[in-house]
Amino acid sequence: MQRATLYGATIGVVFLIIGAIFLGYWLDNLLGSTPWIMLGLVVLSIVGSVALKIWMAVSVAAEIQKQQQSRREGNWDDEP
Image 1 (tube, one colour):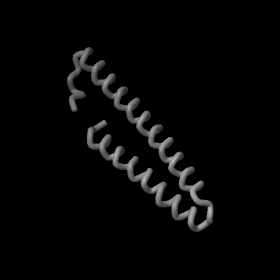
Image 2 (image 1 turned 180 degrees about the vertical axis):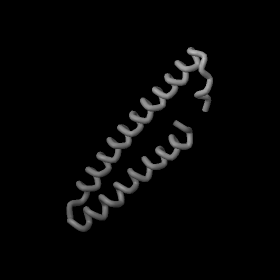
Image 3 (image 1 turned 90 degrees about the vertical axis):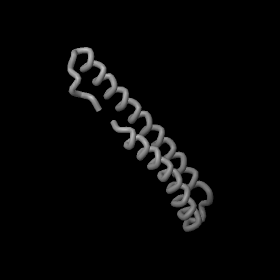
Image 4 (image 1 turned 45 degrees about the horizontal axis):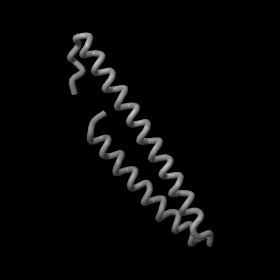
């Protein structure tokens, strides 16, 4: 996985949380349920963000392990 993809995902996480705040605020004002919808959306976006980061870390670790295995076998074609 390329470094740019990791940075892009990090920026996406920030926008996801900020979007949850604004959407929750708007829905709370519309429905008169301040601050419960906003808090719920923020919690869900944080949980989703953590899950995304864990998935990405596992993917990167698997890719690194694959590259190391191919280097041990003498196959240098997997160079980034």
